[in-house]
Image 1 (cartoon, rainbow, N blue to C red):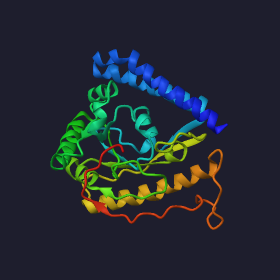
Image 2 (cartoon, rainbow, N blue to C red):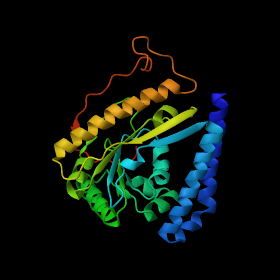
Image 3 (cartoon, rainbow, N blue to C red):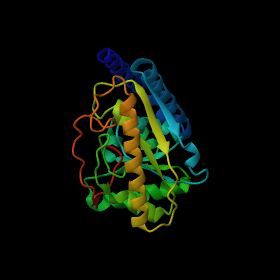
Length: 275
């Protein structure tokens, strides 16, 4: 059953995106706000396919934690392509930090450029941080939320990767509150995974880290919340996933034979929004 549902969903998902790229390419000629309405319409179509074919639903907790005025930073562990799509439904009009190569993808890249994301050229190390900070500063003036994945790539559920310097420098320069966002999307929609497993993805926002704290203190608070709460949501997702994973007798909430957790370290590399 899982094979059939996943196959049908993958066909429908990629078919839907291809059709939209072909027949909605003209929307790139519209004013930006009008184009973004069409983008969100396409993404709501993806949600329909997820729910009715793959059996994936989602819930968002803690929206009241988000600042109601001005720009702010949202920082999350990047587990799946799922959240890169849902962010535009959940947050309205965010600017996502992403690798520059994604803006070169035909049609999709045009929409990404016009929607004013924050592309970072990881090959240009000397300019990567500068372009990140310049792009984020311009978005802050517009009052839009800024989304960054501090580890700079997709991370498997339960795994730990170093937190890179970009998020710390952005927080320090922009003087904006930073909202931790935990999720468990990778439990149901894994990175490059063919199978999409039925269940409910949870996205949860937590109390903002106030602007202006010492950088090290702010990053310590961010990592503490993201690691603990992401792990909690991952355990919860695995416990109710369909079909469920076999349990480790020594720890009922852990997956079998968990992979060793990497030692955390602060990396000086720039973070980007996608693998």
